[in-house]
Length: 182
Image 1: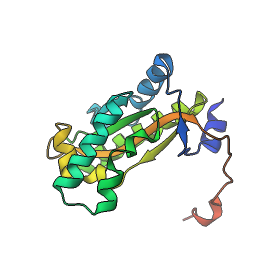
Image 2: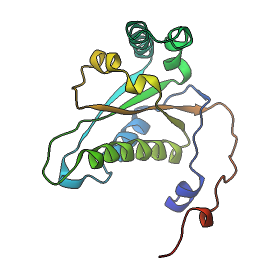
Image 3: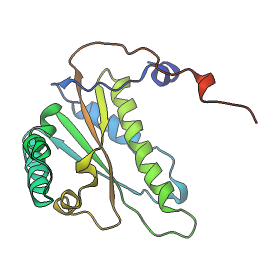
Image 4: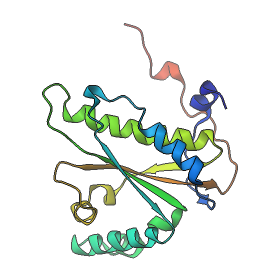
């Protein structure tokens, strides 16, 4: 797949099944994350790969966090099942570092770019992925369970696997609705 085709056909595939990326595919996905824009060469990211039985451990973290933070019953009841929606998840974390020339927002954006780069690398290899956030990306209890610092942010959970169905999505937006000339 060439770069233009990748950029114009990339999509989120929320229904993912095994197999997960193999070691070779995962290495390419990891390398893609490390090639994103990085003002000041701070490398303001951390990634946690969650596969196999670790998905159940992540579900338990979600469950305990939802209970501790007194979430509604629906959130609590779904917590353990959420990580089982794909055979692999990569938790992407922005590791903020105080810097005189690189503000927090740029470091968060760099981590976000890493998620997109990983999803594109997966897609280019015939895999599927979907970037999810939601309550568990904002939960202080989840951050604590993952040993993250106060300034760290979970920018997303990248669910990876094989698309359950081959369903090409139609183009949703027209460029003329979003771009103007000065």
